[in-house]
Image (tube, rainbow, N blue to C red; front, side, top):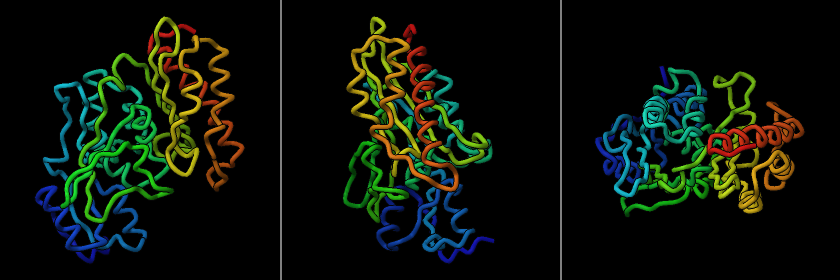
Amino acid sequence: MFPIDQYHRASSVEHACSLLAEYPGRKLIAGGTDVLIRLREGKSGFSSLIDIHDLDELTWINHTADGTLQIGSGVTFTQLINYLKNDSLLPALVEGSSSIGGPQVRNMATLGGNICNGATSADSAAPLLAFNARITLKSQSGTREVPVEDFYAGPGKVHLEPDEIVTTFSINQEDHQNTGSHFYKYAMRKAMDIATIGCAAVCRIEENRIQSLRLAYTVAAPVPTRCHVLEEQVNGQPVSGKLIRDIAAMVLEELSPRNSWRASKDFREHIIRTLADRVVTEAIIRAGGQL
């Protein structure tokens, strides 16, 4: 049995926001794959819950008239993978989603939960950053939208007000159409372990030159991080083996991996460079580039 002190079932997003305002400090629970673990471990602050599992307002995926892909925060990773695979969309996000736990976890875990826990190791974070994803948040005072990149406030922390709920993730058509993308997670036990390093790249190629490259990492800094300076430096460059080597040499300039019991800083730096080579190469090839 889980030591739950108080439990409220929200009937809608609006109801959930009002419950959060009425009962400050309550935790939202959707898939429960993170919250219930913390509850079982006796972490403080997790014994009073507001259940938003399977709300219709949060469990949908569609395209708007302008081609924007919108994903409800309550969509499970299994649902997301199946939708994207059917339409051959966003391979990097499919790969990131597929690396989360085992099938049982992906059947329950939600995209919103994976991002809202603030973990720098979240496997969906690097692909979302690389696709310039945005988050819509709702509270009793209204709605606001922020880039996923700006949502992170620090290790295990996000910019989420006490009465706010993440409702939607949005990706503009121009940020994924006619691109090649790839995500790779390095972990000791693959999907069944927390990432040592995760890396996602999204690129667009024209006349075998980099028209745009977006490169993002997890567990390479206190929060999931884009390599903006590197991206600017390689735009317009011809595709070549030398370009890939240069990217791998430059990538650490914007990252700050640390020592931990999972891996040393030196080992993480080696993996970061290796993944820059591997992931960018595959993204270029998928975009039609010739190396």
